[in-house]
Amino acid sequence: MASILVLGPCLLAQGQEQPAAVPDAPAPQPKPSLAGAEGVTGPITPGMGSNEVPVTGSSSSAEAPPTPPPTQPRPPAQDNFQSVPPEYNKSDMVIHLPVNFVEVPVTVKDSKGKMVPGLTWRDFKVFENGQRQNLRLFTADPAPLSMAFVVDQSVTSDVMAKVNESLGAIQGALTPYDEIAVFSYTHLVTEQSGFTGAQTARVPFVLAQTKSAGAEELVPINSGPFDSCGIHENGQCVDPNLQAGKSAGSGYFMTIPKEVHPLNDAILAAAHSLADRPKERRRIIYVISDGKEAGSKATYKDVLHYLEANNIAVYGTLVGDSARWGEGYLSKFHLPLTMYDNRLVAYVRMTGGTLDSERGVNGIENSYQELAEEARVQYTLGYYTSEPMIDGKFRKIEVRVERPGLEIYTKDGYYPSARDAQ
Image 1 (tube, rainbow, N blue to C red):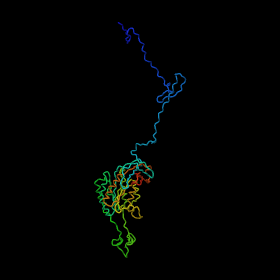
Image 2: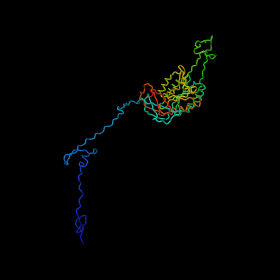
Image 3: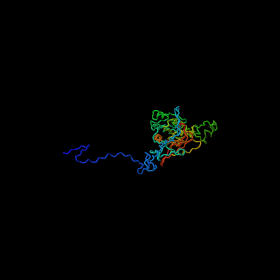
Image 4: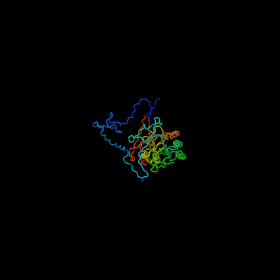
């Protein structure tokens, strides 16, 4: 039986040759330098790539490449928006800043007199003193009203009867967010009530007190028992102050009775009450009158200046003779030393309000609703003026809409006021 030799871990049969020895694993070799690689002419630095360095001779002991300079950090970007830091004093509890923001309410109507909705800020262009302004505010949201309601009690009795019947409808044109003050005037201006909530129970009571009998049309009387000169002697007045040609007149010289319609004073009194109302409320004066002006202490120029300095717009409903067709055009012509037949038109046009002419009760009541809605729902534009805040100079405003066939109602301009700097 053949014997078996045990050689290590292998078993070999007797008489067989021993196989060749198995070679060991290759020994670790040093990593070749990249300097000799194809396409690489210099050492490789992380983040900088390869740099070409001159090689002297064929010796493997080449000089080491120079160490690159350290990268310098980038300087921070300078903010040139405000180079001087603001001053701060801990003792200052309130800081007052000048305000140069101008707000411009605008009403846009089509050729049929209907309000035009859906306009965007791109449709409007605003100019101040001929220079276009960048819009910083645009909204069509309704604004609460502060309304000074002015009733002309110097109209004739038949017209006053229609006005009395329509007064109750003014409360229905207002919302609970609005407020109203009531004024009236005949020879003098009377404040019937200060500002109160438009839907309170006080408003109907105040409007009932505002009703009046009106005035009778005066007819010149120059002869007869009702003549101003009742006692004559030899055909002449006993009183020399009432002789023919004087204030009493004669059969050949007619004296027209002097009328008093203090429209300027009434609008000024209403404007004084509105000047202290909050800025976020829309300040308007609503006048129902025939528009006549005579006997006021305040001038039209002074009242208009006050309205434009306090951002107050005048709206109105014309009644009586002024509501006739074509009367508004004829009222533009004024004869010297005579009464202004329709001064209300100028106030409305210069302050950006709207005017309606009505002769019946239903028309007057509808005008309350329409004009109050127009005043509340307007496009409101705003910009920052580059003019000095308080210099006393008038700033002309022009608003354009880039659509044909539209009419723009806005204020003609404004005066800067010290109230805006508070």
